[in-house]
Amino acid sequence: MQLTKRWWLVVMSLVSAWGVCLLGVPLIAHADYTINHYNVHIDVQKNGNAKVTQAMTYEFDDDYHGVFNVQDLRGLKGAQVEQVTSRLNQGKSQIAQANQTGANNTYQLTKTSKQMRFKLYRQVSDGDQLQVTYRYRLNGVVTNYADTAELNWKIIGTGWDVALKNVKLTVQLPAKKITALQAWTHGPLAGQTQVNRQAGRVVMTVARNPANQFVESHLVFPTSVTATNSRTSSKKRLAAVRKQEAALAKAANQRRQRRQLIRRVIYGAAVGSLMMALIGIWWWLRRHPANRHQRPIPINHSFEVPAVTPAVAQSLWRTRRPDTRALAAEILQAAANRELTITTEPGRKQPIVVLTKLKPLTNSFLATCFEKVTASETLTLSQLKAFGEKDKQGRLNDWFDDWQWSVDQEVTDYQDMNNYALTRNWLGFGWLITVLSLVVTGTGWLISPKVSLMSGAVTGIVAVAFWILALTKYRQIAINTDEGLILVNQINGFRQMLKDIGHFNTAEIGDLVLWEAILPYATAFGLAETVAAKLQVDFGTEALASGLLIYYPLFYGDLGGLDLSGTLGDSLSGALSASSTASSPSGDSGGFSGGSSGGFGGGSGGGAF
Image (cartoon, rainbow, N blue to C red; front, side):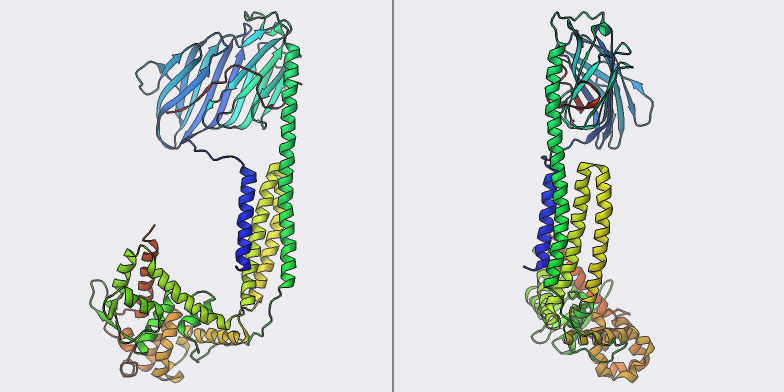
């Protein structure tokens, strides 16, 4: 296995490992809607009841008939509905009427001793935004004990099957300047509780409350705040509440500390991985220096036909595997070698190119096509494309790949494989440093946005500097042997001559026998049409007809201006393309606690239908 592949395995393993560390939760299917704002305002009355305004904003990714909402009533003394309103997109807020018809903008209410369920019919489509507001009263939310009044309520129950975003829960007491007010919230540890004793208000916020996760508010305050409350008890409750909440807060803080420690370890491991990678790369490169080769003086123009085949010449010039233009060049060369003939027949849109086999073919792709595609000694390019369209197994591409591999083997004779692998390793190292830099930046966010920003700035500089070094080395390292450098230099000059053919008199460069040998190379370089046109100007039609016996009918015959070399390349490319696509979360302000204090409302929830 090459070193580059090993580095890529390391990169993918690291990405997978960091993904597990960062995500660490099972993936679940998402509904075709989200709830992007969830707001509950609770006005506690002096009699211990509460007026509730519950508002939520849905964003839909599909068509729905409406939404539903459930309020758990267990532990309460009943409830009364006041109003249900909805607002679609930027339209006007509309009051829904209660009836059983299921008509648009109506709601059905089902109420038992255990729950109150709203089913609001409001037709929505993909891309719609719907804001729904429920107003109702809950009786008996506060209990007055001998030493304190207590409200213990799961304001958000576990019945929501989607995450609630931008959550804000407000509990407003019927008094101001409540110095003995204490509040605790249980739910996601990322949430925050603000206790405003001056205003007699508690506000709980969390950016995202996961699906099926409750948020519970536990308040204690003087009994004078709810002086007319009929729900009373002669028991003392305050000490037990404080003890319970102190234990829950301690456990929550311990979980926060463990989580922060884990995050720091993950971040440290990411930083360590980046540093180790940099040190490891430096150490490896010192032990694997590039071989030195003398580069020849560049040749501007060369008139000498390369001593290698057009496909090898193209591959050495491009530093890539040969393409369909190189294959087209070898077809032309096969015609010059009398291995086959290339003729045309009338077609509906353009002439049909026919290849007729005369003797065994040296080009492996062509030989296999004649054996597998046609049962005769003739093969048309349309037959080849039709075969590719039906080629479910991609055999045509396999044959082409086999031919490319054979050309690659010839190319390796002129390449320094140590230096070639080293250039690829430099690129692999660059991607490794880039991925690890992104991992360091991402894991920095686990600690704080500031750490992430600082990490991104530092690792960004490191990655950019490394890439500059890698690309510099990539260009500096000679991937060819001394013999290969001389050959590539000659090929570059030869191709440049063909590209600048308009500046030369081709008749003075050499006779038509020479140009007959040159045309396949021009085809491989994508310059055949230019060269053929220049030959016609310099030699004239008569000389071409008598001196360019093999190629004259292909480039200058009755093809209606057809560029045969381009047609061959396009047809082969189309056939190969068809073959490859045939298959297919003390009671002051602070963070939320975990656990539960046993409040009512745990079964509340909602969704869409």
